[in-house]
Length: 261
Image (tube, rainbow, N blue to C red):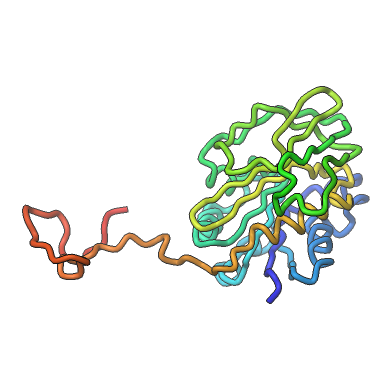
């Protein structure tokens, strides 16, 4: 079965900015989905901010293996209920790939638990991405570095938790560097942040960037399936203990009663 992937896009700049509309006439989310669908192992569909429930209903997320996320202009418009819904699915095992300005999205900050802040400059600088973990699956098929000719600069410090792995580091013409490809595990879910993707440049048409996206979806996919029990906190009765025990002392809860949350 193909990896069921939903490409989520804010879909605002494409509707309001002529430059962005010229580069991505069908929307960035469609361009990313087309790149993913070029690989027969992936089945990508799209969702946008403007759809009911932002296109991320309980039912749709339940059958999603990997979710990619691009947002920028209106992170605050994303429903807190949907954010919690996505977070639960990541904890259960759904992969999440956060792109570019999605570092300030509610879902990324929710999962990281940090400000996720950084330096930035919009000057069309050359970005060279260095592959510092060449054996990582996300870097498969890439040279030791590749260039994106026009990009927005992101610079350190990037206030995120220490990553599980650092796959890419970027250098910009102005001298700044940035950890541009980072992985984490949240619950049973794999999370990858990938920096390139400013909307006024044709980054998602770049062959190397598209290769990274395909590799990232395959890496984020969890073939073991969902771990639904990760959200549970069962009260185990004395008689169900693995070894015989006697109950001693007072207790607050009745046998089998749910705990406080």
